[in-house]
Image 1 (cartoon, rainbow, N blue to C red):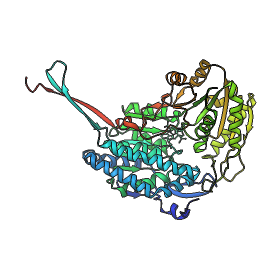
Image 2: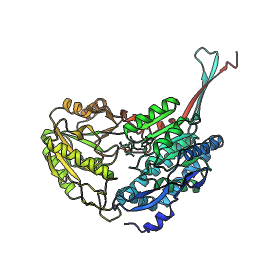
Image 3: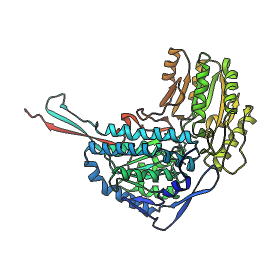
Image 4: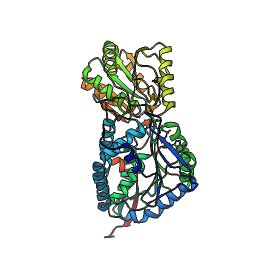
Length: 490
Ligand code: NAD
């Protein structure tokens, strides 16, 4: 439950494009509706930006760049810190807004405000620590200066599943580095970004440093911005197919790119694991965000001796979930984002069952209103089932048994994705071997959630390029310059 009035909150969210510090209608006056996935009702109608609006936003980011890039790092840091403080004051508003437009239970939305806010705090601290170096070349004939510079105006594209955190994870390091940005949120969940743009302005971010274009013409607007020679960086979080298309377009402009793409996380449980902790970790890794996380465990690879016990225990926990609108006290599972997501979950479950999996609980779409799918557990999922290959992106926990460590490694690595893996074992040496043997950019060793602003978040293989968070996160927005000067004594 929230004490905030939903209608008042929604009415307070800006409904226009944010360009050069001003709120503007779309150049052709077009609008689009944002719906609450728990009810299907329209909750707000917003401006739908055109290609011209996208260019105007890039103009504003380019105009603001010289002054912002020369603003002392300490001043940039303090603005980001003020944004962090304001976010704490507006925590409940942001949480409720995310629940309304995206569907996650309020407790999880509050968790996202904490997580998303940490990027503002972390990068406010990083801003003041952008170093360089000075030293003699090995021959002693000169002095080398290595300096770091903001890369330039950036285009930041975010997905719908973490409307706040995916925005702060890009905007905070960009601003800390001295870059300006055009942000394009997903059209399914744009309200949080607009509300956040207002917060940044209130925190003292100068006009034009952050611009937001909401649109239902993502492809056309993005193509024009990405082709513009003034743009220097593209950072995208979303699905692998869209990321691949954007990378091809970015190549024409030789853009720096960061790609946070899809996942297919294995969650490996060995017989020597603490099963209570493995079950807790499994529930968090699978059902956080209603299974709609790139880090969501997609395949539970469980050693044969404990596979049945594990399946029984997770099924018991899942049967205790309460599904409903995320604003209702006690609800643990909200709706999926839209009809397509429900249809995909249904298809994947049906395919697995037809191929011989046992359905332990759930398995069906729920009658509307709203786009709900039952929390589901499948055991004995057979090789070749679609859900072992594809990102499920829904509340479906699929268990595959294995016998030996080599088999577990082969199953876990049998995917083109490489974002994150989870391993549960009490054997330290085995844990260390798994760190070296699993092809993922991140690993939870006896832990079911790995995200942290101080950590380099990112994937191997088709899960992406680059890292967000940590000191790696700001490096993505910096260029390196090497300068040689003569030996001053020569
Ligand atoms: P999506 O690829 O459909 O959309 C992501 C963003 O790209 C949205 O803003 C969308 O409007 C925009 N977009 C779509 N088509 C476009 C085009 N042709 N040109 C330019 N922009 C376009 O992804 P989604 O459904 O919003 O998000 C879910 C996906 O994101 C999942 O695959 C998930 O794993 C991934 N994801 C990855 C991470 C990560 O850090 N690796 C984090 C969150 C989500």
